[in-house]
Image (cartoon, rainbow, N blue to C red; front, side, top):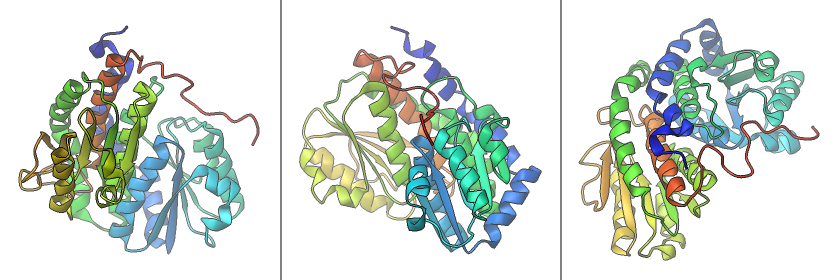
Length: 349
């Protein structure tokens, strides 16, 4: 079995800070300016992707709704292909996210949306991909491109790029400045990753990840990374919803992770503390000690002083540390997750 530090997945995740820096610089390129204009003038926006890219879409849509003060929805690519009337309005822009730009559903959606009169914005790591060619505007996180099967630096860098374009479209200069500070704050993600690596040395019976607001998509991404690399049973849940039934799974031998920051952080941290009282091991990732007040168990502070939305790309790297470490503990190879390839190509469109 490959040693932790030699894992391709881990080595690529560890360069997320550099990839984010390159992606943020691309937000000011002509494509970024054009995308900004499309988003700034739209009455409503749809953001779409599959797998990790869908969770990225959920996160970006949540931030964009607040920043732009208009309807921004996230939907899986399959909904736009199979049930578009349930997602689309008249001629709103459609933002299509795909690391490879070759995923069948992503390319098909771009072609169909353009034919139907919807402006299309691609977010990808490969400028020469079919999606990049099919879309009206393409935002490229060139340094986010990766070889590993599971998404790591691609997720964080594409998220930072899209959030920067959204913030500029909203005229939110403070959020743009805080996003530009992410690379210098990446050491905080590295410190949290050390905690994740240590926690991954325990073979947990199950893992629950709690996140509210824009962190809902981040929590789902944590769950996906853990399940696809180590096959551990996971569940992502909004913190207060966890109290409405799922909290019954709390017991010794399971891990509950809370992703909190900004509005509602104290109240959501209290749910994590409740899980600890019920026997679960807990790990809270907050911005400040004030947000983590009253918490027990492991605590990691990431993004203090930043807008809560700006810290979101920093939350991916600790997930990869936990996922890689737990995979090795469970005898799995995170560089070769079973049944998976890097790009999903459907047999028929």
